[in-house]
Length: 94
Image 1 (cartoon, rainbow, N blue to C red):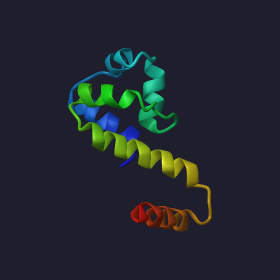
Image 2: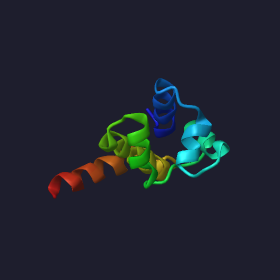
Image 3: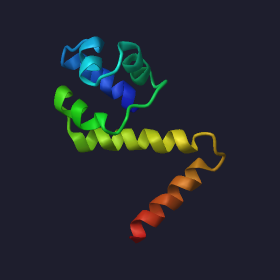
């Protein structure tokens, strides 16, 4: 699941309006709407705030957010899968 979709799902489960969440994040409702649709990216500093407001695990939110960042970075590459495999190999060597 993508970060924006997950945030929207959690927001709705917690019966929060976009404008309520956007206000706490110090952004306008249109920006939050774009984040939920995957058209814009949330900032990393929003993750702890979102975790608290949406009653979510901060580490899980960060993992989904980072996965989105990686996907956005390599999605146009022909060898995206090879890039991910090499990255995993490099991480496992540490």
